Length: 282
Image 1 (cartoon, rainbow, N blue to C red):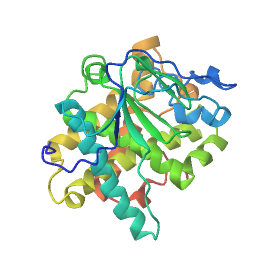
Image 2 (cartoon, rainbow, N blue to C red; image 1 turned 90 degrees about the horizontal axis):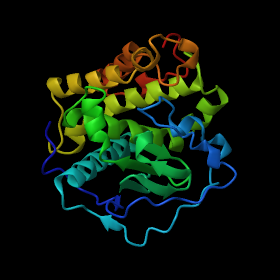
Image 3 (tube, rainbow, N blue to C red; image 1 turned 90 degrees about the vertical axis):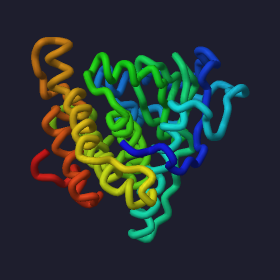
Image 4 (cartoon, rainbow, N blue to C red; image 1 turned 180 degrees about the vertical axis):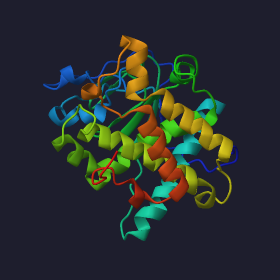
């Protein structure tokens, strides 16, 4: 995957090295049941209807805002900037203005968010209340060792998927998903997640042109992203954890569905092809 030399916006809030910092929890504190995107299969975005704005983040006076110096931080910065380039073009084409996330927050162990206390065990997540993506970089080890999906393209897919939730927040699709329910094979949660997979594919298809060639994914990189999507399908995770598949408990979609929607986005480069909410078949 090509990314070194890509533009960097410095939209990084680097809290690494601060240690666990808990955020304040309001009436919605129980929603940390924001339980992990990849680890437990429940994305924060599907449960936040009861807590938007309820939790106040703890002070992060020692955090560093800007462009990180280390390679891991630079990678996140470049990929987030690339997603902004792609979505800015797409929003402009539809007569709108794209607003990037407030920040990509890098942290270790735990940190405060307006959605409650973010914890590394939850995996990467997007908090609509503060419009930020949260990522403990130790997750890359889990992605490779626990889920068998290593490589830079797999990591980029994860970042692009979380940014896609920000896009869905801007367009109102997140609210639509909440009205359709949070569990089940045809639920709003599944439709939201599959659309985010498709949007991640759209980014992969458009990154090279939007970045002037600085960021690019080839066929092998798309295959890496597909492998990551397959590894975290609800059916695959359920077989691993409980030995059986329960579609009524799906929150993200099956491995086949996740791969299919990511592939659709990557092949078309068209967000209009990602309308999971009106799809006759997921």
